[in-house]
Length: 290
Ligand SMILES: [Zn+2]
Image (cartoon, rainbow, N blue to C red; front, side, top):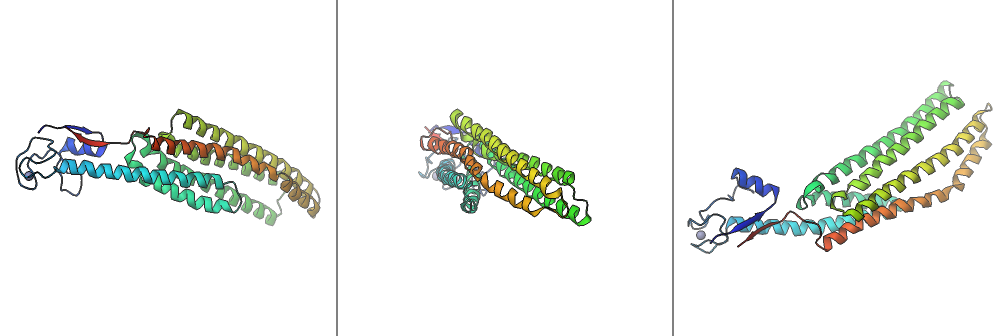
């Protein structure tokens, strides 16, 4: 019996190239002797001519197909988690639930990425790293702003200009941190998206940049004028601080703009589920055909 093999899995190709066993040392892909009865078969046989047992090769490919099916299902579940996480991310209090769901979704996507070819092996990992970096940067910025202001106040060097320069670098940093985390939203499923999904993801990124910049600049100008008013007298004018808080509450509607990038990202992610269901994403397939 002659068989043509259709083997595209990189792991299998490496195994064939170096004639090594692909798993736990029990398989040899170019072995022509049946491991069960010792009959000498043609290379790439599917069923032993001596005893009728399936060859290790066909068992191996069946096992990979089984893994591929599970990976597709896990990726699908992970993407649904990610969609819910994205939609919850701008709603106060529920965003914590969203964060947990999102983390679970990213872990599922990363664990099941091996079945899909190309860049999808690296992009979800890169996205997770970029997200962590962006979050850590934002955290450090807020922390260093608070400690700067506190130490300037303690040493008596807190002036309008020193407070404003600390504030402007905080807000510039928040915009940059927002750009970095926004990139991770684009990257996570980018390799699995078609042209339409990728355009949606970049639109989500652009919308996020605009929304963060607008919200940050509006907040900055309110806080800036409040700071100038509060620090212009000694002791600081507490009524000016109260009016800053009232003004910041007044622009709460800006938070609604966050829904725009969130919805664009969610639809971009959903297109990947649709592609998986329609079999449009070529998984790394292994098959033995006569
Ligand atoms: Zn045999």
